[in-house]
Image (cartoon, rainbow, N blue to C red; front, side, top):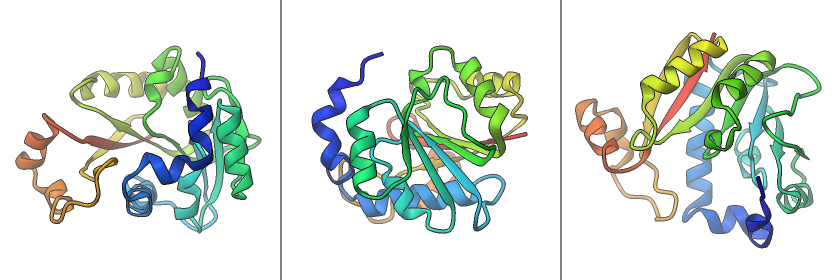
Length: 197
């Protein structure tokens, strides 16, 4: 797979990829810490396909390690003092097991999804956190792949934070509205998933 299309965007990725980068990434980080098994201070988060590692700024109590296949993104992350390595997420193995692995907007780049999930399970001790667009991928198919990889439990939460538009008042309250939230997900937004053993 070629990643050159991201080269020109790398220097200002966090600032330009999100309408409200701080709000979006802070909300994502809060869910990473709390959905499924709780992360405690000092736990390591491995962020696969991390771009410029912007999530690191919102996980100050965790040890952060980012992985991205694009050299320009890795360089931009390092210029900002973020701990990011250049590697393919399908093959990368961290130097030690990690408590949590995240993969946002990129699980679909895997060569083989079940293989990638089993690979992640081999070095992840607490949980895998990722996003899923339910209009493109069936949750039951993902659940089957997770079980095959050794992740037996799955918790989900709607994520109604627009990426390319500013905050919409009241939208986050709808995340916990049950049937209404499921109805909204048929048209827009994603699920955040936490898989654990």
